[in-house]
Length: 375
Image 1 (cartoon, rainbow, N blue to C red):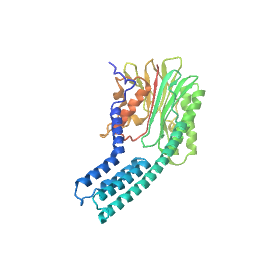
Image 2: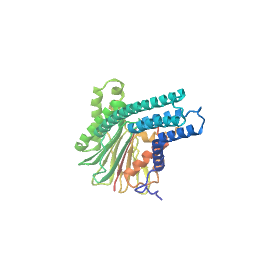
Image 3: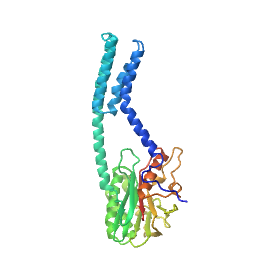
Image 4: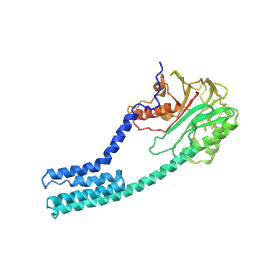
């Protein structure tokens, strides 16, 4: 019996608990400076005068500096100095050398905490600006497809292995055309700006050829030529050895089938409405795009039934090569078999959560996911 998909308000397994832990940690951080001041006051009142609570009073503004606002940091520093001064006045020891030293130490640390807070905020502002630029670049080079294209439900997700990165060498694109809905999912060899440039070339060539070429095979050849032209402009090892694995698909408007050309890419998965899963292996494996110098032969599109209620899942090797702490790969075929999902977005959200949990959050490669469902 098929496993029911998550409900509308449900989260992937473990996601709700993780959010609660994060929320609890944030709440604790907000009150930690106050707790340190209270602990220091109790320590000072309940112990002999030879014992000092200065470490707790100095820790309060230092904890607030990188985590809380400038105002809260300043108020925490002022409160720490005021509490120490009040305690020493209460004991009539404010003019003792050790009391003066303690007051100066706490006041100095409070000033330093405000300076640290200012520097941290400036760094965060620069980081936020850089992330906004990176996000804008992602949307320009790798725009997210619409939820519905040509009567099909679409969902896409990009998970970067590098923290704070938005785009790398993985790619996807979906285009409605006179010949049906066409799509490409690929993985460019290499990292950095060279890979991003190749992504832009592939997607640009796909957008143009998907509208103009009558067959999916011709689209693949256009991508091959575009990468070849780009390779002649490059320098170094990437210009010589660069290639892109890719899978192209065409879903005609008037037939419940899908045509696929696979150029050395992980095979797509077909998830039927009853939970049955089928791996769409290529009958005639072909070399990746950009390796035409090693052999030239015509591409052959392979046709498969794509019935109503079924979902096509395209992915890059960041999914199938994600490892856990014991070096075991994540197996999407085994993990998805027998399961059903309400819509493509739920499928991708669940997959991304499971892969992060499987790898312990330490993914070594970017992961692009594209799901297409026939309603």
